[in-house]
Image (tube, rainbow, N blue to C red):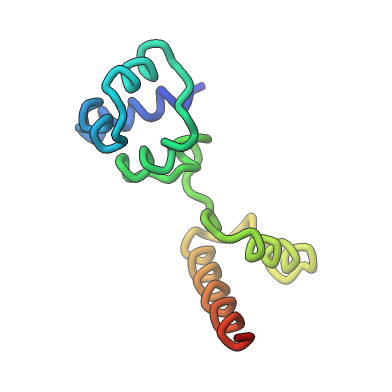
Length: 120
């Protein structure tokens, strides 16, 4: 099974980046990057969002090896709302395509913003 570290260094190679470029981007020492690769040292979770940005990958992919979920990045309240819809058989979240998930997410995000502005 591919570890987080192996996945990151595979992507660095695939995307023709260097460890030095990543160190500069993350504002860490080259030795940190080397220890992640050579020793398999744990990567501090605070670096994962920036590594994902540097590699053009989702955090979910880096951490779990899975493609980005349709609702990744959604607020807790929005996810809770989607779950309630699913529990009432109004929506099947597991079988949404990425495009459907993104459209649904954007629709509800706008609806929540409108609701917040009305309450003010």
